[in-house]
Length: 286
Image 1 (tube, one colour):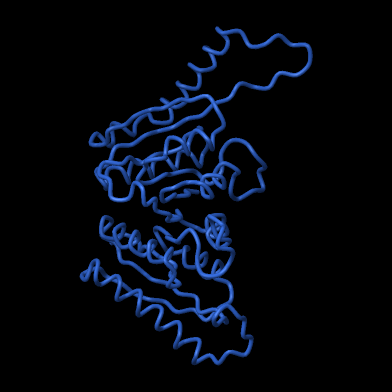
Image 2 (tube, helix red, strand yellow):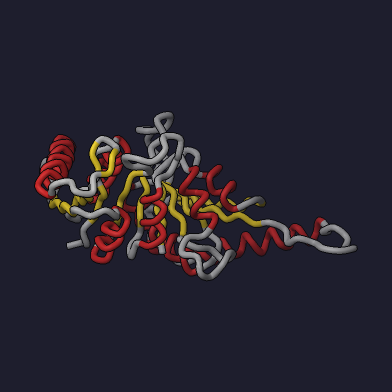
């Protein structure tokens, strides 16, 4: 049996979206689903340090029961288990749960925080530290339900990008969707009294970047002949190019870190930008 899918659930609207997405993913993978709720010491927005443990369990149990009820209305035959954790750190519990999971699913935002934020702190932390691919679910009402929307994957030739390409092809094949592979490039900066790039030099670099994308996809199209692949090589900032390509996507897949940035970072700047601004579910693959 495939490794279970874990979904973080707190009863919020964003968590409901994550729950629905996770259930569909579990069905496609023929995998069990585990719903995890972290019963934090809060009530009506106020922290209560001495809140009775039985009340915490009671409230948390009701949240899970509501989630199960919602899930059964969608897929009554899905294999589901629940996990109630009376802890303060949601991110720590979900990160630990990811050790044995094949996929971890969270909503873009949970309860608490600031209403204007597009992405919650838990989502960012989990995407940075989880031990398996993480899906941050955000749906776009303008495109939800449209058939044939593609899986989009950002490609830059890094090790994390290789894993992202593997994952994207697998998902496109499972879902019966087309795949769009996107690669962004920019001209190197020139300093001092150096003449501008000549047109033939720019074209040479463009062809080299196109070759890099082709090499990154090599072998995958043979392994997944059922996937219709479109390659896109665009000059511009990686985050902007990827987000533009994924404007009408069913799913966007990125690696946790690309070729640039600082080695100590667990989540690269492009991945963070995509998580904050994408209008579709985003998978971060390490």
